[in-house]
Length: 391
Ligand SMILES: *Cc1c(COP(=O)(O)O)cnc(C)c1O
Image 1 (cartoon, rainbow, N blue to C red):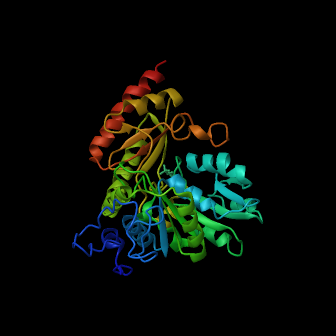
Image 2: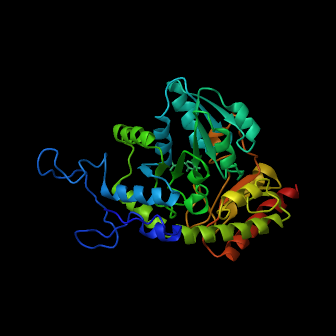
Image 3: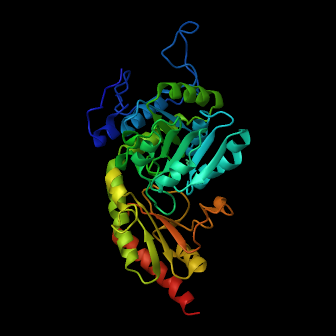
């Protein structure tokens, strides 16, 4: 019997949902059940656990936690965000079609374009910020519409309720990859999405120390299919990974508040800088998606992208020239990261028409003091850009 936290605020649920004290010892934190199997009293007589690919109590605790945060009936956890993505595609049959965001996460694009499409599932790309284009892109055989918002790396905003309304009466299910927002800032199921997906590697885990994914939903029949395939295909997270993710989630609300405040200050500082051409941050009032973001998000999260004068060479130099920001892929951890999408996260979209600008830089703004972050960007820009401009 687990306690019901449905009426509590998300800050409270992030600490308590699925986190009942251990009944045998009273341990406040649910243990890491580092076991592969469970003893049976007689053949088939057990306490609900048989084998840890199928179920593990630490994973069950994570399922309950994430379902609670997203306001879903159920959640399922996987060994990575892409394992979660792959599992969702098991809802499809040959002949079905996926309508995918034209700036989806590169790994999602690669999985659908290079792997799933080999099994008779077709896909096409559309700008999800344009609802007319989404309507035009729907086919009778479309079964999944795959939205990310904010998008990566341009931080475009998709109107989740707008897309959900458009799918009324159509058999396609709406998936929202909520990795960039986290359930603290945005809850897509409440806006009409059918499934929410996370790379828990990012904000949910929050400390750059674990890789994982989750899917959350309300549809029981879909749960049965996904749960069957999760067990059948086996890309489950280990108990220690589930525990690390749960540990990270407890501070999600305070982290997201600070990530958002720091990112806004960084975006504003970059906008004032002569070496910066354009800043992409949905919290800026002149961002084209600002109004929709303000409506569907509590705050604007910690991701900021910008283009530098001097293009590819300057951007490469800035990315290598920071000291507080580490040059690395990924995002959502307490430490700030900088990367050059054209050569790093978005290399896999080269040649697809979805390429990013050569002068683009993406930041995952962490929880260091914001003055240190801004000073670091200033010194890297000063070192990289005037030298190039002088040529
Ligand atoms: C990282 C990421 C994924 C993939 O997750 P992994 O945990 O790396 O497999 C999917 N979507 C988005 C938006 C991501 O940032």
